[in-house]
Length: 303
Image (cartoon, rainbow, N blue to C red; front, side):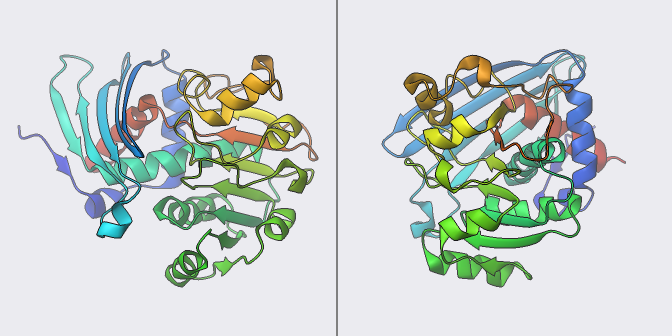
């Protein structure tokens, strides 16, 4: 039997965001994943290898190269490869398009958070960062919140205008502070090393999905935002000691370890408890989510 190589367009045609959320729910009810991450750096460039094994699901190894200057070369910032292995005998079961796994895992991670933390009546969604992840979030949120209205802010106004042109119905936000003040849900998908969202701008009832920061020297919100919110993570193991978004406020005392309410393995605690609270979900995007996503893609490929 030949090993399937699942390409982006044909693979995506078989997927749904609701199906992926169900796959995440199922995956987190299984034995906790064993994960191993390796980070190598050269200036702004990153080589990230992530491996995961879930007993009963199998193993996945994903290697990503992250080169922030690639758009100037006409190439994607993130590239790499994903291999999926059998839990029974360790044989290679599929090679899945890297960008397919990354798109659905990354957007699905934050969508899974929003499904539990955003208010059910949320309508105004602000995307901060006009890259490919921001565009994916319009698609993902739209599947769960059919009445959603989207605006995008980008450090480069031209980038926001380009995204709005590619995503019908998305408007361009001119002033970030004003846009934050009117949003129900804010998603940050930037490559920023300094906070772009200030806690003083936030209002009761908002939910923030933080995607972009993935290194110890990267942040998208300030200490005041972390101190005002109930904070959640997708995985303790892939966020707390690895990402500046948590490292810095834990170091300054703005956030205590016990203030981090829950991760995806604690479904009873991973929820909004009042309409007025501010919630923050930090997306770490661990390899176990790549494994769950890849398994969902392979199962859908044969369904």
